[in-house]
Length: 97
Figure 1 (cartoon, rainbow, N blue to C red):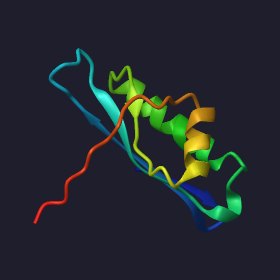
Figure 2 (cartoon, helix red, strand yellow):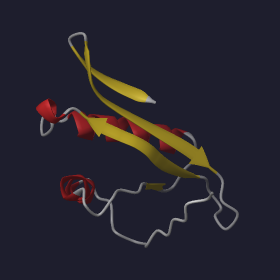
Figure 3 (cartoon, one colour):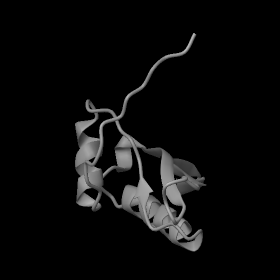
Figure 4 (cartoon, helix red, strand yellow):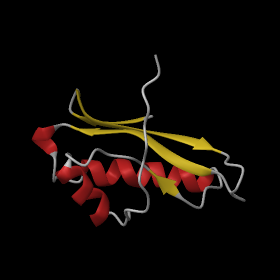
């Protein structure tokens, strides 16, 4: 997990999980958290956090990095597309009792 700090205030955080997947030759990095304070969005905080996650993924031998975000989070989706991410799959979720 990485945090972005402005003065003494945390303005963003991001976490990545590196995992091996049976059908892949290289591990994959999954972004499990990415949050930027609304007051500093558009200032480069998100980009800097994402760059740090990508550096970590490369250092761990990953050749891909992925994430999920809700359809309703249109601004987040637009940000990830600007950063080079592509819509590639449909995610299914089932709540367990």
